[in-house]
Structures are given as C-alpha cells and as structure tokens.
Image 1: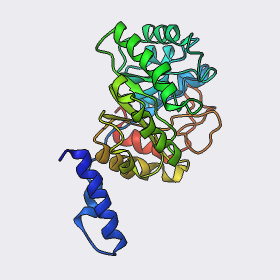
Image 2: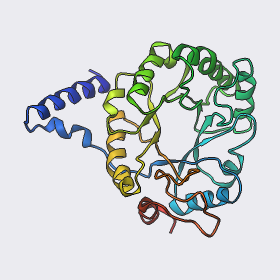
Image 3: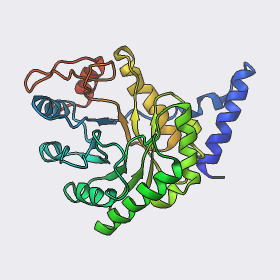
Length: 281
C-alpha cells in the first residue's frame, strides 16, 4: 500500500475512533513532523514597500518565496535581483487574471524567459472563472509545453483552486481533466487544518503555495503546529505562508503595507518569532 492510501485510510480510522470516544495511536499519526523555516508569499509591490519587504526577508532569513511574476510587466524582477532565495514564480497578473487563450502562449514565454531558473512556475492563481477542462487544455497544457521547450528541467505547478470546500472539489476535477499529465507539482491552498482531503487527489507531489490564518494572535501556532501537520500529511516541506504584506493590513500580514526600509512596522508576533529563531545573526 502506498503512503497516500495508507494515510487516507488511517485518517478515516482515526476519525472513527475519535467519534467513538476511544484513544488510539492513529489520532496522533498526523502530528508527526518537525517545524521548519517554511516559505513565504510576497506580493510584488513596487515603491518603498518593495525595499521594506526585501529588508524583512533578510531579517527573517527566509529561503523560499512565492511571488507573482507578472504577465505584462516584470513585477518580480526587483525581488529576484534584490534577494537570493528559492522562488516559486506565479505565472499570473492580478490586473489580467485570465488572459485570452490566443495571447497566453506569448505571455507565458516572456514571463519565464525574463525570470529564468526558478524552482517552479505555477500556472495562474485560483482560476475560478475557468472550468477545469478549459484550464487544463487552454492554459496549463500550453504553458507546460512552452516552459519545457525553454528548458526541460524547469518544473511546472498546476494552479491551486481556492482553499475552500468548493476548491477541494475543483482540485479533484482538475485531476479528472488531466492536470497531472501537464505538471510536475500540484499546488494547493490549505486554509483549514484538513490536508487529508487532498491525499487521493493527485499522483504528483504537493506544493502548498498558500496557507495561513487571518488572525495575528494565531499566526505562531499556525506556523509551528498546523504547518507542521500539513507538511507531514502531504509529504512536502514546501509550504508558503500567506503573507509577508498585503494591501490592507487585513490580519494575514506580518508587516504593514506602510513599512519603509529602515522602518518596518510589524503586525504579527510571528515576525519576531521567525526572526529570533531563524533570522540572520
């Protein structure tokens, strides 16, 4: 029996014993794992906040970053040049979330060629306006072919649906539409502590390209316990917390959008936790 089938069956068994009020070692099977220096989502803001985010990454010692590359302009360039890390490049543009399929191939090629050598290229972000079959056939498949044509060693990740109950169904629908045939990784957004739902959804390895909680008081626990749990269940150490900064200081972010180089405004206790445990000395 392979690991994913075993974990799926174990999760069902653990749920059954929990409902029966019994103690079982199965209830602890998914708590295995060890906290790591996880990755971080970084919005490709421009201006003073860009310098502040790079400074924050340096202070925290973050080694893995997920960032939008941009399709019509080089959004990620200042970060790729300004901070050495392992990057997941999101082939996406927030001002044009689903380009016309006829324009798509050239946009992909330009985005990848100006951002070479990244760890992986993730094809669009939560493409909720597309059916699974349209996404796979008109966006994922051509992007995969173009990227592999640029460099066969480049790794491609299929888009993650939203981290909701409907998004989990979309994850399986993407598999049925053939997503696994046109990617090296399957990305997932996990915003609840329920990674078991994804176990049988793909034969590909996972990238958890977004995870987190919209409450700074819970950020440290999410990083130390929940992300460790997700990592153990889905057999991946590439998890990317959402987020370093956002446009609204909405409860997800570690630092304020109003931060400036030399004047980082910290919003979350997780910032100091990571800095003290993993940051530069």
